[in-house]
Image (cartoon, rainbow, N blue to C red; front, side, top):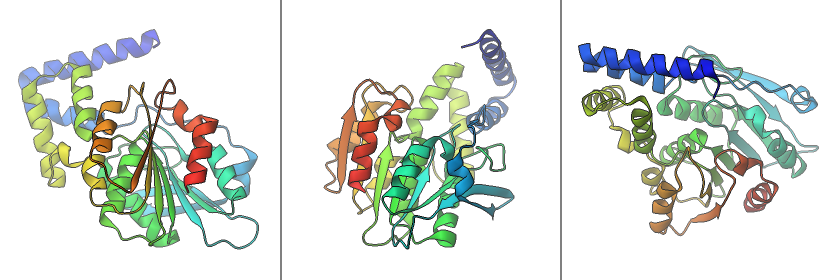
Length: 282
């Protein structure tokens, strides 16, 4: 981490703690805004692949959502949607896009609000789920899905609430399994006290009607009957393996688990063997 980043983090922590001394609720509001705001947008060089694809855009509330569609040579009845993680972009999945086109898929991929080429400054799970639903309505039906990290969590919540085709399948790569865990890690990092945390949870309850524990891939997959492939690395420091193991222990017959070692949170989807397994499953 660069010195400027370290100093910025120290400044943010100090400001939040000072705010908390005056108002726990105000500190919680600032913490929620920080939690929902990507620090950076992924910058990926445009390649020939993205020049070939058809540029798509649609309105989601006040946001313009931008993405691409690729059609295979000849007609296809197969369609896949690829969903990226927090502070990422669908353009990071170019190898998958190329592979699925070769397999005869129509490929859809979009940047979530506050990511890549799409509008917005903040993102939350309900907004991401709304984006998936809009894509499905406008460009579906979709038979295959792949979601990494935050995109994987959003995918489980979409599949829980929306009817898909009988032959649908989905792949979750290092999904953000428990929002509760993400919030715990966030508060530990910022060194904020339990009173601010209580206010933080109350704000989410007021905005969504649910506490953070509700926004759980483990809870959502209980209501999904389609075949799922779940891939997770034992050394993932962003979405801990312990949460994924709990889902495995639930023994859902429609979920297949593959655990890797040494790939972490991002290298896992770039790994050639992992990619082979994902393509073979779908």
